[in-house]
Length: 149
Image (cartoon, rainbow, N blue to C red; front, side, top):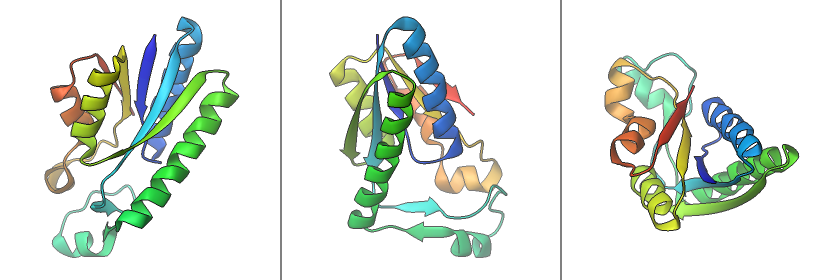
């Protein structure tokens, strides 16, 4: 079985990787970890919801392409190390573009049996402003998606 794990460096993505690794070991499967480089706004703050635009200005950062590639490579290297340490056959792929579209399209084209993704559980205004990659992947994917917190 082939599993795709979307990683972004968050604790939740790490939890999804651990869960997928456990499943891959049991199923004698393989994992491909992916990170989508999409220079955009990301949350540099804590776990509290963003409730005002002032909060957003203090916590949200616009990233450039070089920074996004470097961060993405670091995230993938960490994920590769973790999966290899667990004894799983693992590959990594840096994708370019909107994470939802790129992850879903890559999973379909490459014939993955399932997608694993972490979910931060934002609520309220933060969810409206930033959206939910996990939710959008679930809605668009043509293969089963496991969402891990």
